[in-house]
Length: 308
Length: 180
Image 1 (spheres, helix red, strand yellow):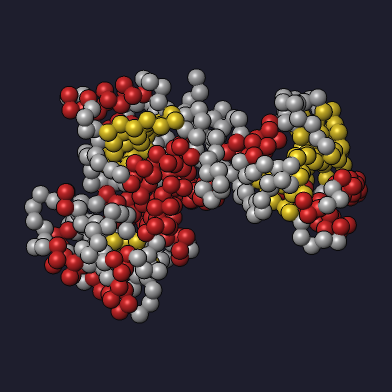
Image 2 (tube, helix red, strand yellow):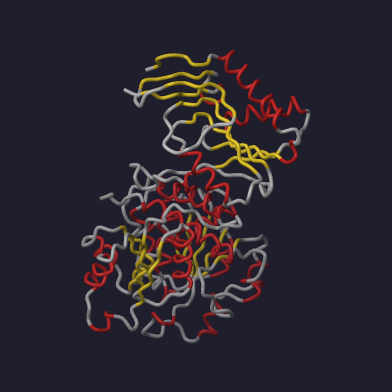
């Protein structure tokens, strides 16, 4: 069983936990191929999706996962809610839990918010992204998709390209890949790579071609314009010229590497259309696997409730 | 600790032969029958029975699948640990077929209830029958009875019927053990 009561970050998971989540996700992926894509396991559970930050795809993915497990779902988004009236985080969540909601999936702009919340409530919490800290389910579905394509990740080489500094996806990916024994290279302009990131055991590379030459898989991150309050590169066009991944670059490597992106893609900036839509791209598989992996996480955490 | 051997290797072999013949007796058109072994332990039994069926009927292809019922259990949250499921592979349609569910021990009947719920999500079978190796009589908690029975035993709550297979446990036998 999982060694944790919540899924707050990959940093809290053991490799055994990750293996168990993958094994369970295999089963759910199979359920999703059937004509009736549901199982009744969580019909006694209510899950609240509490999103203090915008999201379409993660929220949809979680909502689908919950519904396919047979759970009841309620959605809360910060805009137009009591948060604008000044309600605190703990009050917001406790009020929702008082309505007999059993589990919380939360996305928040402040790094560490889920850990803070976990100290104040009993229900299981799944972190759907906290500030620039972690996005554990994304890393899990990324690793699951990689594994589906290339097999066991031990010894494989993954390159993460893009705005690492502001990316919770990058950090969770690094933790996850380290726990699975993969080798990680970070690539991007120096302004987008945090200092001392080598302490996490990753290699830093500022030349895109060199970074892609030796890797098996490239995970391309979105340029997050909404997170940058100072200009970290001159223009999008210049970024695309030096760090954008396109088919010509992929073909010049001499072998087929796997191309991934958590979405949404800024086509023509970090990833060109011909690369995103190529045979090497598993971007849509990531989305499909996302539902199965989230079903696995919710299912495995649901047993942790004490029955009254 | 083991209290008694219910079926030794020779008896188990005879029983499996008899069950296979009973099945053929009732299912003359095997093309329209689907055999489904219940994970995790019913599968050892169903593997053996299908082997015998293929020999007796001289057919190479029979509709055979395995069903895991973990997601349909009625005790998903009350048991202390969350269960990790095994594989389900049913590669054919069960629509309009006569399904034979195969499990090793029938005790409270809840597993079979879950199996029928799971089955309905795959389609509408023409009929569903149940084959079990051991029927623990008078222990049912739901109204479910087997159509084909290997052996019937009277047991109490503190006892457990263990079915051992060469492939997994090194020996073919069915024993009654004391849980204490």
